[in-house]
Length: 379
Image (cartoon, rainbow, N blue to C red; front, side, top):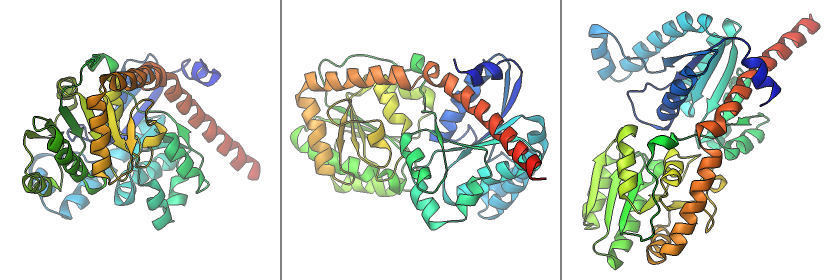
């Protein structure tokens, strides 16, 4: 246990998690919900969630159906709630994506946090960080509103360092007790994809790879979990490829995902931009062999032929070939899955990240003190 964590536990801390609403599915919301639940169990900590997309009350709810008006009204309520809740917190923990989402969600939280002299950390989670910071140079000084930058991967830490922004790493974690683990000593031709239907997740490559798989294994099955703006395009592509035994489930709540992981034999993942996908480490936890593209931060958690199979992004034939290798070699699939499971237990559970989060809050406090001392000395 670090000295900072020990010091932190001696007195109460009030944490305000600023993150997407739990009523919507997505990686940020899932991690926020897990942190909220775990911190609520910690002695000496109180935690609240401030949704960046608060539900509007009464008749105002109808305005959230109107484009642009929705953004304006939601932002006004969000700012109002921040001004009420931030003064009652010690640490403002703001989740962040890229581009407009960065401006609309974490930036207001950081500004209000600074206004009230609170300790502010930004938890940046988007695989689009390099493009974001390159195209929008004003984002770099805005990042410095935070006393501490936290990322879930060494990949993003390295990206931030390119822009002179130091970052700490705390990995995503899974609720290991809720995920069913089993050894797959025989690999059935049942494949699973679990990504939202956004262009950068490239679920189309999964469908094209499955067409190659089904050419060899006509009985193969594919479950496609997710939803998003490309829904109709992906359904049309599946029809165009004449795929059989494909099930589009739509968005699935996290509590219903364990059964889908358990039913599958190989997990497929094919983004062209990514950071640290929750679904990959969930597959690790379940003993489900992973075949993935090498986009963004994925090489920081997957090593080809050690704890999974990894192929170039946008290469459906190579994705299919790697998946078929595992299907045809159960011993290899089991070895990779066992290694991945062991790494998940060591790195991606609450026990593995708990003290690191407490250290982050302590480091944030020390950063505020240092800034205060510098300001006092200057004056």
